[in-house]
Length: 211
Image (cartoon, rainbow, N blue to C red; front, side, top):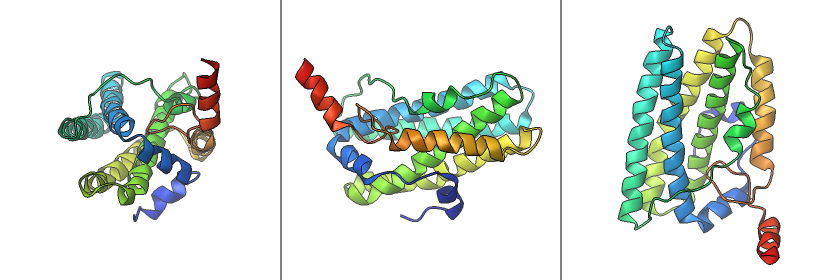
């Protein structure tokens, strides 16, 4: 799948093949967590709108983004219903928290870092849709391909806003979060999620043995 070169360059690494294998082995969890991610993305955009009411450009972009994310949520849950996948609770992956725990607490650093984190989440989502699409059935593959354009634009919106509201260059902050994002993608996780690292099957097996 073709992705914008700037998006590829922005991400610190490509998604490991092991994660793609795990996604194909967990089709229900993939759809359920994808729906959760769309819902969380809409919530993040709305929270920014309520927190920063004095920034018209941010309000407009986040309003559009929230609408698109909720539309994607509706599309994913419709696909789930069609395929007999029941929407159920799943524990959250640690991916976003691994990034957000390093967000500064004083403005404008808090806003800038939050927007940079948003850019990485959207860029990674776009890259993972592209990784998955060729391996899925026609309906789901076409759906994931249809999301690439909007996810790439969301990444651009977040990064553009971060640069706009920063008091100076943000290359050092981007580099920090790139390092953190790369670690989150490459490190093993014990449960498969849309933004998880590759599943550590040995750890999962050991846990099952202990039970």
